[in-house]
Length: 386
Image (cartoon, rainbow, N blue to C red):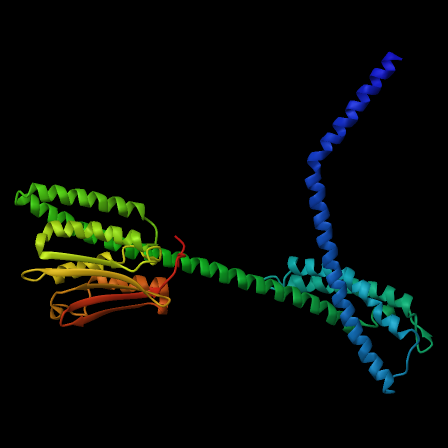
């Protein structure tokens, strides 16, 4: 009795382990159930389509019978509905064949042969079906071969329709894939071009700053040189922080400009006056990274006259537009708007790449000086992914 009881316990444990080992297989069962549900839903849709086709055919036949054009054959309504289950069943294999043997330039001959063989198979099944539901016509019993070729044109038309729909859907998917691929390539090209434009700016002003520092060292102005080196270090730190970003918040762009103007003030001393004005509420709006630096550099270069000069930067909101103005008090006649340098050309190109036709960039010259004005959509989400 003890041995029997022990054996029973062992078998009970095995049963528990067997149930436990089946648990990891549940995702597989769920996956199979999902696939079966998708297939059944697809068959239901196919059946609904063929039912509509059959009902339209029945309606046409009914109108012809009602008008006296045709006599009502026995059981004509049910005979017209008989192809629904047949075409519901054969449509998925025809679609699979169409995908496997597409009517392409290099494979069209083999595809035609395969589809003709498949069509004969469909005609054979249809012959069996019509032999059962409609064995005779006008009191004369038809043979199987006669039934098989009885609806050849209609069945061939249906078969060609299924193949045509599959090809149309496949080519449409290919078209969408190519559009997505083209959009991705265009975005990659835009990012590469924007990064190239951005890279042009950094060596430009870094060279100018280092050149100024070397000049201070040559005249033995060590204090100013050290101050400029410290400012340059801060400037480089800000550049590294925003490296790769096409757009940054206004406050980050102005912080960089402040560091740059501090270096320039060390260079020019009291000859340079700086004014920064920011409207409250626009500090978090996005602007192109380093978009102000070439404009400010241009303003400093042209704004310093024989005595003093003033450079002002203002950022504000005009409706749904962010307006940025960089102004100076230099001689407007010294600048040729038709022959812009690398900074202005770069700025214009970047704005067009980022915002297209919804941006504005212009140089407004007056007797008081020159203003570089940028207007872009006020936004807080990047226009181009980094």
